[in-house]
Image 1 (cartoon, one colour):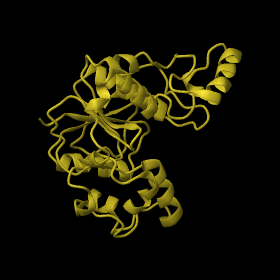
Image 2 (cartoon, helix red, strand yellow; image 1 turned 135 degrees about the vertical axis):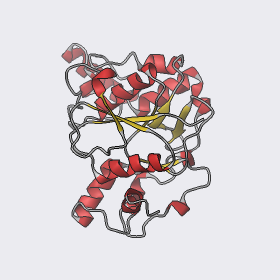
Image 3 (cartoon, helix red, strand yellow; image 1 turned 90 degrees about the vertical axis):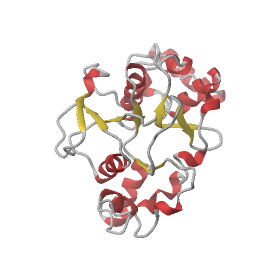
Image 4 (cartoon, one colour; image 1 turned 120 degrees about the horizontal axis):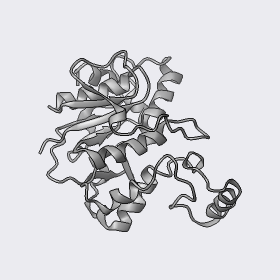
Length: 261
């Protein structure tokens, strides 16, 4: 069954990775809905653009204190989106290789053999794990649920000193893949996880191949792959350093963007 696909963009302009991601889903027959908190200068005309406040309206963008990344807000948003709507969430660095026509409402996959990733995520609204994910909000304070050992002792001290450690000061990724993995494993719903090749066949340390001329071809993806995670943060740094911020003509991203793949 074809899924309704949606994502969030924080900012006023989409880059080539995001535009390529959207285009790939449209090419596979999906209607793409994009939520945003401000007007987008270059949103494609055939994208359904909606106000992100419909899903999560807390009057600010929640940023990770150390990195100043808005990925923290994105995590909160995707859980709310899944709980409130029937959309399938996708990060804007997923390239769809074929229609996302899954028969189940459990759609997520392993990034590696021990950890899930939430770049593609859908759960039934009655999911026990989703209920636990929704307990985390912008005002949550305390200890991250996944930490153990010496790190937990260090964070426990910070938690006491601060009167409750806010999620903005939790270790990077605490409410993302780590929490998703923890809660789905605890509920037993992890049994629905798709294998690594479904979305994450190319690991992060090879992200540069999506930018190098002839560095990657869709034909190289495994037969069981539904999509490819482009690892936008790492890929963007790579393109900035090696290609002055512009994807070469024969790069995978540029080919997807121009329907030449």
